[in-house]
Length: 103
Image (tube, rainbow, N blue to C red; front, top):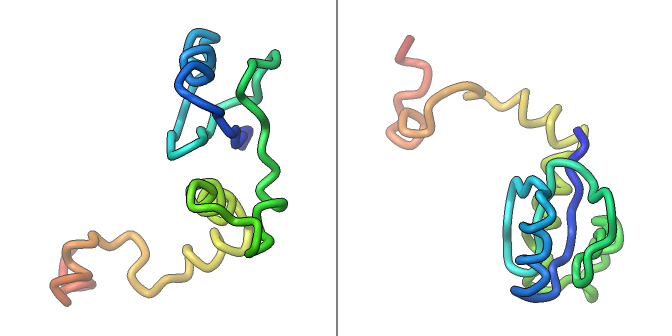
């Protein structure tokens, strides 16, 4: 995967990012996940290293989306998710308590 997290300073920076043709996969407060790294710098758009967000006293509410994205990219998360008891089961069946009863 080549996705990268970026912090977006404001609406004008987001407009510049969109105008650049960058492929935005996810957007959340204060940031975006791009399909590929930016080819050039864009004023108000900065690359985020999610490891730097992991210090609790430095986490801001707008960082939660970036942290969630980083977690989902980790090998440990993916391995554990693949071992869930109802992997591949429709969430509706899990909630209804009928998981495993449908083909």
